Every structure is written in structure tokens, then in C-alpha cells.
Image 1 (cartoon, helix red, strand yellow):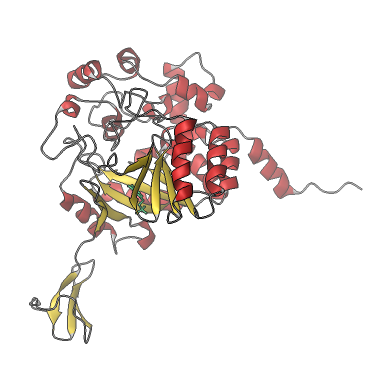
Image 2 (tube, rainbow, N blue to C red):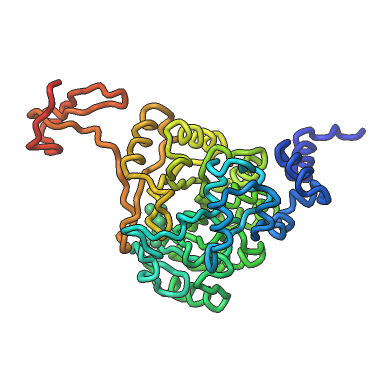
Length: 406
Ligand SMILES: *Cc1c(COP(=O)(O)O)cnc(C)c1O
């Protein structure tokens, strides 16, 4: 007698063969702007990369540009080129230059204005570079920039000086070897953060080789990869890529910007990564008029949580040259954290951090809930603004302050 088919195994094998999902939005965008292409091509990351929108003519085919956008595109030279995957372009408004995702990727002339305090390399990463692409700022961990290529180029990029084909660095296996030699010689480094550029733009075999090479260095116990791929080119998260990642067990730090990125496709990419057991964290750059709003940020954090991504950092936008139109006062980040903490799931609250100019590293800021001290009582405020006395005999926190009336 034949064994009954194992239903769960059958479902699993079907899922393993299923094509990458495509949303209704993508489908209609594909039909409208890439009438000759198939769904299979759209869902192939190589096709998306080849079709990347890089020229004024290509942008104008998809977007009604403002004069400011058009002249900025014409004016742009060098690093941080224009580059948007058709998939990511499909999430942007074709008509509204103020739409958040469009603002993050289509240049405007403000990009060419250097304001006070802005620099090409405000974090002094170049000064902390100990081998090609290797930034060693904290004693126990190192930042390894492994490529200058991204799937798309964010206009607020903290490494605008170096990314893209016109970027100032060149990366090669010989240079990787120099960085790897440094890592091998420095046993105090237990944590390596791969970034760039976007490490997941690297071909599977090369990435496999690099991760295996890092895993062979015994003192490196923690490896993470910073990437925006699941948001801008989710179809790159192929089963083969997931197999490579699963083999080497890195954590992933996902660069996310706005709830509009949370599509069917992104959900599928994140599900593959989470199902492979890869711990997922997020990092978000706070930007004026894009995501500097408690409700927008709360929605984004909720969308991440349900997709098994732990919000990790909310970053103050670095004072990179030409970033004035993106930057908010530091207050804004604290206002957002105040609007999240206590008002929603604790897991949904990222740490708000700024990167100190000159290579001081990340400094986290938290809203102050301590109002003062009254003898043995600490006077604290909760998320709703109510004031409490907390018995704290012998404590010195807020000593010498006068507690407000409570
Ligand atoms: C952000 C960063 C790290 C990692 O910092 P964590 O707080 O551990 O996430 C390491 N090195 C450099 C140079 C960095 O900028």
C-alpha cells in the first residue's frame, strides 16, 4: 500500500519551488513601463540591476520631474551616482517630488550646498582606517567596507564620498586580503560589521568565500552585515543567497526608511531571512519630512516587528556635505523616542544615536525621565507625563537638584 503523502513536506517543497512573489503594484508598474519584460524578469535581481535607473532620460520616462530635480541630475558628477532599481522606483510617486521615498533617491540642488558643520567624512572614518576599507574605531569591533556598490543610492548616504562606480575607493580581492590580515593580527576584534556599499550586492560565491574566511579567524565571534537589499531589491534574497548566509550565521542590520517599503516582496525577503534563523535588526536614518513623525515611525517599527526584525538604531542624519535638507534638530529624535517608549511594545523602540564628529563614535540619547531628587526619593516621570516618587535611599542620581512640586 502506498504511503499517504506527507502534507507538510509537500507544502514545504511547493514553497521551495514557488517563484518570488509580485505585488499588484509591481505588476501594474511592470505592464505600464516595461511592457516587453516578463514577471520572471521583474522578479530576477539581475534584470532589476541591469535596468537600474541611472540617466536623466531614464528618470524622465518614469517621473514628472521638478525643475530642481532635473537640474540637479544634470549637474551631478562623481560619487553617489543616481541609481534606483525599477522595483524601488515603483514605490515612489511619479508626480510628487515631496513623496518620502522619492526624496531619498532623486537628487535636488540642495545636495550641492555645503552648510556649516558639514563634511565629506564627518565621522572621520578615513582617519580610523587601518587597512583598505577597514575602520577600527572601537577596541573590540571593526567596520569592514567590502564594496562601494549599492543596489540603489540614497541621497543622504553617510559614505557619499566613496560609493558608486565613481566613488573614491576601489575594492579588490588584494585589498580584502590586507584587511583580513589586519583582522587576523588583532585578536581583540571579536565583532566584524560588513558594510560598504551594500555587501549583498556581492556575488554569492564571493560572499561565501569572504564569510568563510572571516569564520576561520577564531577570535571573530560575531559577524553582521549592513544592507538595504531587502527594501530596494528584495528579489536578491534568493534561496541560494539565504543558503550562503545560513551557512555562516551572520546577523543582519537592515537599513529601513519608511513604511512604504513594507511590500509583499520585502515581506517575502524578510521571511526567508528570518526562517533561515538569521537574527534581524533595523537601522533608520531620521530625516525631515520623510520619517520625522511619531506615527510614521511607529508604523514602521510595528511593520518590522511583525516581520521578526528588532528595531536597533534610529540615527540622527550625519552632517554629510549637502544633507541640510534632510537633517532635523536632535530634539526630533528624542521626541520620537518619547512618542514610542511606553506608548507601544518595548521591542519596537530603537536606540536613538548620533555619531560624534571627528570619530567619537555613536552616542545614544534618551529622553530624560528623571525630574530630580527629594531626599531619599527620586522624582520620575512616566510616559504619560505623570510624576512618581521612587524610594531610592542612598542613591546619588540627581543629587543636588530641587525636585519639582509633586
Ligand atoms: C556603528 C559602528 C560600529 C558598530 O557599533 P555598534 O554600536 O556595536 O552597533 C562599529 N564600528 C564603526 C566604525 C561604526 O561606525
